[in-house]
Image (tube, rainbow, N blue to C red; front, side):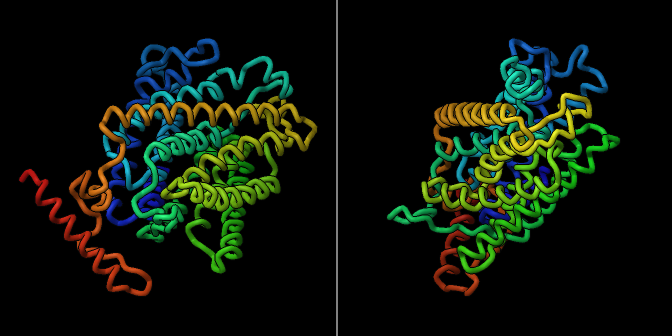
Length: 433
C-alpha cells in the first residue's frame, strides 16, 4: 500500500517535489510503526474506558506480548500508516518536512486510534445500547475502514489544506483555477495498479483468515467497485472534456476501492458495481467542486478518500443484504435499508457525521498548532518555487531533467532552465561543505 501511495503521489506532482513526496511516504510508515507501537494500539484496542479510549497495551507490554495481539497490532499498523499517508498527497508541494512529520505522529498515535476504538475496539459507536437497538442488534459497522482509515485521513487532509492554502500559480489573479500537471502519469498509473492489487489484502485480509469463505465475495466486490469507479470517471471526463482523462480515471478506480471498503463483506456483487459507479461521480465532481472553492488538493485525496469514504459508510446502511453477520458468519445478520432495516442506515449516517467531525475538527486543531509551533507550516514562496526537493532535502530526483509542454514552447523551456539554475545556486549557497 505504501509503495502504491508513493507512486501515485509522486506521479501527480511536479518533478521538483518528487524526492519530498517519496521521503514523506517512507517517513510515514516509519513514524506510524513506532507511534502505533508505543501508544496508538493501546488507545485503539486496549481495555475500554467509557467507550471513548483504550487504556492498556502500551508498547505491547504485559499480556499484550502475545502472538494473537501482535498479529492484530501488525495488521492495524498498516491501516495507521495509510491514514497518515493520505494527508501527504493532498498537501503535496507546500509543507515543511518537520511540520508534516509532526502531523503524521499525531494521526498515527491519537486521531486514527481513538476513532478506531469507537468503531473497532468496543467503543461507543459500535456498542452504545441506543445505536444497537436502532440498528437491530448491532452498532455502527465498517468492515475494513472506509470511515476509520480513508474518510478519516481525507478529512484530516482537508483541514490541513485549509491551513496551508493553494500552491503558487494554482489560481490566476481572478481566482480561476489553473492546472498544475504532474510530472509522470506512468508513476501515477503504476501506483494505482499497486494499490488496486494491495486492496485485496486490505479488504479480504480484514477477515484475518484465508480460510474464511467470505474472502471470495469480498475480493470480487473490491474488484467490481474499482472497475465501475474507473469506467464512470472515464465516461464523465470524456463527455465533459471531449477526451477521456487518465488522472481522474485513476482516481475513479481508487474512489471505488475506498467506497467498497466498509461494505465489502455485507453486500452482493451487483451492489458493489452501483457503489463503485456512485464513487466515480463523487471523485470527479467532488474534485471540481473543491477546485472551484479554492481548495488545492494536489492528488484528489479529499474526494477519493474523504467523500468516497463517507459514501462507503452510507452505502453499507443501504445495501447490506443479510448474508453476513457482525464480522462473522454468526447472527445477528446485517441488513440495510433495501432489506427492510432503515434503522441501520440511520446508525451509519450518525457514524459518518461523527467521523467527519472528529477527523476534520482534530485535524484543523493539530495543523493550526503545528503552524504556530514550527513558525509556519508552509515553506517560503522562494522555497516553494525552487521545489521542496532542494529546499527541504538538498536533493533532486531527476538531474538535468527539463519538463516541457506537449508542443515544446521556448518560453516554458527557458523558465524550466531558469528554475534548474536557481536550484543549483540554492544548493551551493546553502551547502555546508
